[in-house]
Amino acid sequence: MANNPSNVLRGKMGAVWVDDEQWLHVESLDGTINIEYGDIKFLGDQATYKKQTGWNGTGSLTYRKINSRVQNKMANKVKAGMTVRAKIVVKNDDPDVRGTQHIVLNDVTFDSFVLTKLDANAEFITEELPFAFSHFEIVDSIA
Image (tube, rainbow, N blue to C red):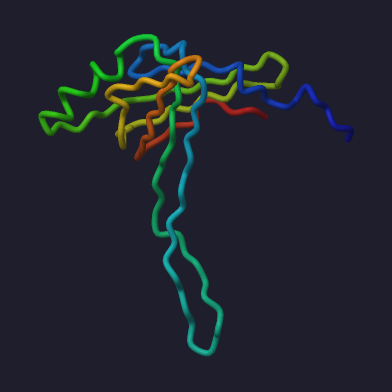
């Protein structure tokens, strides 16, 4: 079978919603599953084997600063000792590819957020939101 460049997914064809609100100013987003393992050893065998004991989800969302949405959503809750939780929906709908990738990240908690930022060397201000999640759903996948 010959290579078909049309089947390569373009990252620019995506959309992101945070708590059902579409964020049009997202530059990049990644969500990663980190697999946790325990060591297994057997008598008479020098090898160390691995067995999955769990997983955790981590990610990062980078966006162009156009408003104070993140600060308004998080600052007062964090200051009051409350955990900020969210749902992030990621959809990649490249019309050149056979199918759509649509993933929902649930129980998202944020590791940090930028409260304020100035940068004389930056043409545009961007901010990063590192996060963790404990549940996910693959709604649609590319064949």
